[in-house]
Length: 254
Image (cartoon, rainbow, N blue to C red):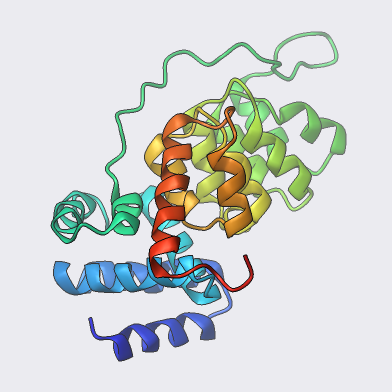
């Protein structure tokens, strides 16, 4: 894809205010473009994200959300794109398209489960129904629920605050399927504080965590690269991106 066409796509993206619609615009590109042209577009967008171009950052985030969306058009395509990206030796594309490692969910970690007034543990259906309601007491007690369906409903509850979404994203011990629900929710996926909490949570599949690195501003990259509590592969991705930034010139604001 030529530079003018990439610029035209960014202008189109900026003209759409709803993040869900931006994800769908990128899905159309993923469905319609041949692999080489799609890779050109992704390369341009990742470089733009490193330069802190807002439209490029939104587009990279849209790609990440699209990659975990139910029925994603990326199924099977990302591995093909990754093989092509390897031939280009582009570290930013490598980060964006790195295939996810298999995720073993295992048993839910022990944690508080909502109970009725008589002490009876609520059923899964009752907890999912409670997550849709706006009762502050109920919401606070559901933040650590191990069921992804409960968390998905909780994240879409208008009464949930960003502080609570960050708590869900940062919860230890975490579950990959619960954290993916945070990333699937457009309302919270766009929040930098939520993204930061997710990428530092060792339960998030590493390919998703390293993709979120592409959204970090320069100071946060340095912070995570030195943070021994962050997953090792996330720290390595930060260092790789810092090297890429150095190759393209230090951001003006850094």
